[in-house]
Amino acid sequence: MTLYIAVSLLLFLGGLTLFVIGSKVIYPLYLMFIEQKVISNPTKFLKKVK
Image (cartoon, rainbow, N blue to C red; front, side, top):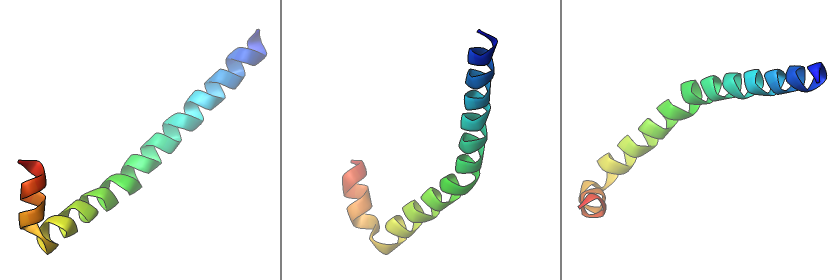
């Protein structure tokens, strides 16, 4: 039983660290990607939004 708890804790912590790293790295990239899309063709973007 303790082994199961330890494993689940490790998995949870691992997932948490991955999530934190991902949000630090992926989120800015995602924002940059969106900004470039909007800047390169704002009319298309606005049509998609509406």
